[in-house]
Image (cartoon, rainbow, N blue to C red; front, side, top):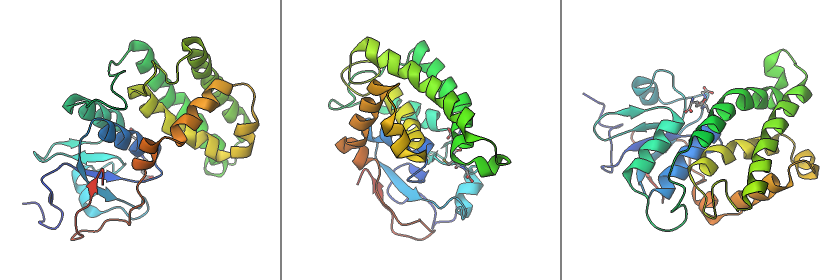
Length: 227
Ligand SMILES: N[C@@H](CCC(=O)N[C@@H](CS)C(=O)NCC(=O)O)C(=O)O
């Protein structure tokens, strides 16, 4: 039997999350957009709760633990689950449709882009590799989104409302910028993408997806997300 101190306390799915993690961010954005409330548990990566490891031995975030015991432990699957629940009117009301082009971008993002991003951002973790060729790999990928956005002439990847792919991709573009903000902001090769990122960073729904929470421990009073 599950330890009662870790059980669902609010009758809602439990989301294990980490504020700064781009994978967790995309999951929170999709939950927020689809109006799916959860019981939120902030974690610290170096000191993960035992219950998280119990339900998902690979112990990455995000992890969504449904009230029926189902565990969803891949960020895109959490997004797809959220989108499948409902999608209220308001921001993100369009672009629900998932496209082959968008899915190809996600493969690029979660594969080569993330791999290069980690080497650009944390070269010391990779035998002190030279970060600049890795930054260039990311730039080349960013330029494809820049060209797409410029071609569409729309505020978001697939129209005038942010959608599934904006939520899935933007947290990683944000992380790329954070590695060297002054450098990123001074670049002239991807101006439309820079505007797209700024639109995201200044949106009230982005702020709503980034609550600052103390790390959870078993027995804590439950917290709801969105608050
Ligand atoms: N493929 C996973 C990746 C998730 C992931 O790697 N999350 C990182 C945080 S950004 C993590 O939890 N890493 C575990 C650790 O650092 O111990 C997903 O899409 O959810």
